[in-house]
Image (tube, rainbow, N blue to C red; front, top):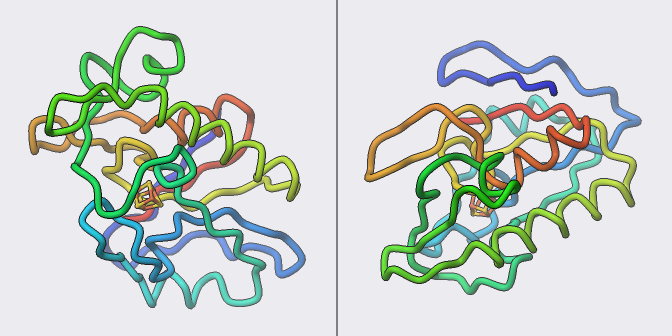
Length: 162
Ligand code: SF4
């Protein structure tokens, strides 16, 4: 399992080779796919990917969820626990969205394999894309989201972006 973190500050990811495709959380490149309909464009991050072929994905939309949607949290564990059936993803209305999150993770993996992706840059703190951090009861906690966990399990390098 490999994972690295792109910190909030000035540290930067290793420069991806220009001939390589990289998977990127769609909200990080300006797509309005966040739960509240917003986006999270990171211009400095985008600059660092200059020359790479970006494959944008939003696992929650791929899992069949609409935008906007209610925020969700992983309950009783992290993304790895969800993959093993030990934890669930529940939205703020109390609906169990575990199957949507699993579907989105599997579709993301399929896209990654089709594109021979070896590296993914995913948005931290998300129950799907969080790489080292997720959120539970509005507080950050260590752990990975469902999609990040599946990609890591499959040997893809996943780098968290704040
Ligand atoms: S963090 Fe991931 S699941 Fe959430 S909006 Fe961004 S791409 Fe979609």
